Amino acid sequence: ITCTKHVCNSISIKTEREQCEKAARVHDLMVKMDKCHAHQKQQYHNCLCVPHATASQKRLQFLYKFYKKYDYNSLHKVNKIASKIQNTQQMAGLIAKLLQKFPQIIAQKPPPTDGRQAEIERRKRQAKYEKEEQQEIQTERNTHQREADKTQRQQQQQQQEL
Image 1 (spheres, rainbow, N blue to C red):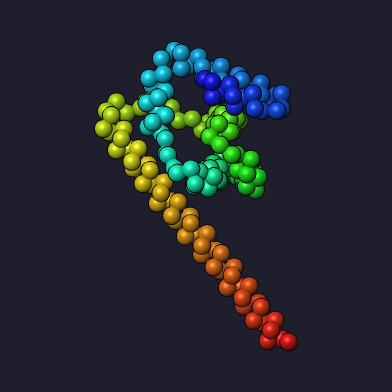
Image 2 (image 1 turned 45 degrees about the horizontal axis):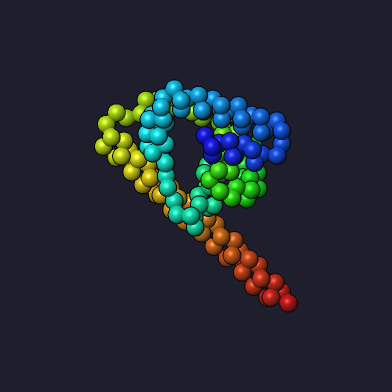
């Protein structure tokens, strides 16, 4: 709760700060009603932890996937948005704003009751995420290689013309 207050207070635009505070109050109410148990269980169940060194790249990938799925017309803004996110608090604030803007992203399904099953599912999601990430990296490498090859061919063609 202190974290959400900190995030909301860091927002300079009054209307956005008020929306953040409203979302924080709803979150606070939910946590108080549940005594945090279910919330913490869901946080652990859905968390994909990454090393600090790769956090900004993971945020960019998350935002790219999110905007590709939910707001394709704003996909061109992803790099600019990601460049403003410097820490987990700012990312949490952005996610809170996205939840307000796109409430349909929240899937209503009960958490697994068996702790072992939840861990298995979390590991499967982590493996799937890492596999998709490797595929995206390979696609990017292929794209860059094609662009480099094209540039090299153009340079060779220009040299031949001289």
